Structure formats: C-alpha cells, structure tokens
Amino acid sequence: MSEEKFMEEAIDEALTNVMTRHGGPFGAIIVKDGKIIGRGRNEVTASNDPTAHAEVQAIREACQNLKSFQLENCEIYTSCEPCPMCIGAIYWARPKAVYYACTKEDAAKIGFDDQFIYEQLALPKEYRQIPMKQIFPDNGDLPFKTWEKSQDKVEY
Image (cartoon, rainbow, N blue to C red):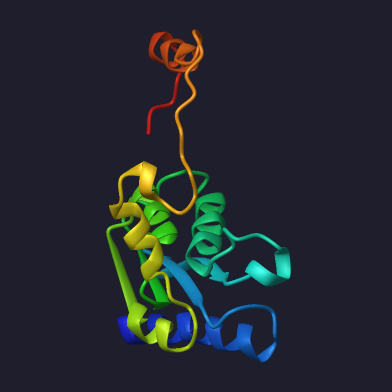
C-alpha cells in the first residue's frame, strides 16, 4: 500500500467513528513493514476516558500486537495533527514517522481547540489554570532510589 492509501485508512477510521456516533472525527493506524498493526478511533465519549484519542488507541493496539512498548520502524497515519497528549504518547512510543491529514487549526475550526494546553504548558506552574504544587515527604524519592538500584529493571 502507498502512503496515500494508508492515510485513506486513517481517514476511514475517523469517518466511521462519526457515522456510528461513537466519538470524535479522529482515526489513526500504525504500519510496520507495509502492514497495519494497530487501529484507533477517538472513543473519549463512548468510554468516558479522556485519554482515548485515536492515536493512543492505535498505539495501545500496535504495542499489544508487537508485544513491545516501542514502535520501532513503525509509522503512524492519523486523520489530524496530534494533540499535545498524543504527541507525548507518540514520542514515548518512538515510531520512525507520523503523517497527518488535517491540521490542529482545522480541528480548532470545528470545536477541537487544544491551543490552551500549549499555552498552559508554557506558563510557570504557579500561573497555570490547574494548580500544581510539589509535596515532598521524607521518602518522596524512595521509588526513584529503588528503581536506580534495581538489577532487573526494563529501561525505556
């Protein structure tokens, strides 16, 4: 399949989602060696899960199929430029490329505007809309110290 055909698959996922009233107009697929190994649709409202974006759903399925938490040599095709949360998940998954159809500006025009998240992330913590405050008891770094000493950890 060509890149254009893979993108059409991602767009079909998004369109099916809208047509079945299952969630937002977003779809994604993950490809490795020319084969689709993961599919995802926006299921935020259907599952009451704010993390159930198409890219995250596709990453979860692809990683299960690969039996790995990394998407080495994989490509992500998504119907829209990923949001900040999905960008974070994508970087953690480490695919080799991401391709998208619509832009974040296109999404904003139909009510999916994540610009406020970019703006919030740029602010010092004390000025963010959702307060974030460090609470550090005496043993606050014990999990980190234990991890650092562990002989059988799986690094990522």
